[in-house]
Image (cartoon, rainbow, N blue to C red; front, side):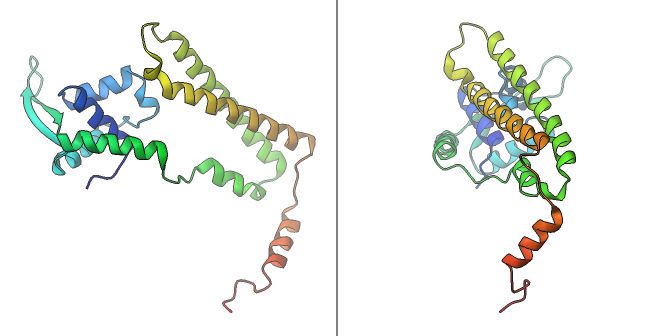
Length: 204
C-alpha cells in the first residue's frame, strides 16, 4: 500500500475534487499556497507518487488531453478507495501524527558541541530567518481574497501561531546566551557524562 505522505494526500484530494493531470495538480498546489505544507518542488517526485497511487488502485487514469503542440497528458481521478484512504490519512494526521525528528531539535540537543558565542551567532541567523518567514506568512494571509473561507487558509493560521512561538522562544534563548545566563563548559559536561555512566559503556 502507498506510504502515507502529505504529497500523496494532496494528490488524492485534488483528484477527488475533479479529474486532472499532474501539471495542473502542481500548479493548483502552488496557486493555493499548499506548497508551503506539501513538498511539490520536484515534478519527478509528484509523478512517482502518482505512479504509486495508480499501482495501488487509489488513482485511475481516466483520459488523455492534448493542448496545441504539447505532449499528451494523462488525466487522473481518485477511486472510491482512494477517497476513503484520503479521509483516513487526514484523520490519522490530525489525531495520531508520526513522531518526527526535527533537525533543529537535534541541533539543540547537541548545542554543547559549540562555544556559547558561536551558538549565539547561529541562533541569531535562525531567528532572523524565522522572523522573515513569519512576516511572509502574515503578509500572504493579509493578501488572501476576502471571499476565501477561513478553512482554506487554516494551515497558514497554524503556521503563524507556530512561528510566533518559535520566534519568541529563540529570542529568549539568544538573550540568555548573550547575557551569560546560559553557558557551559565542554570539559565539565564531559566529566558529568562520565560520572553518569560508571560502566564506561562496557556491557555488564
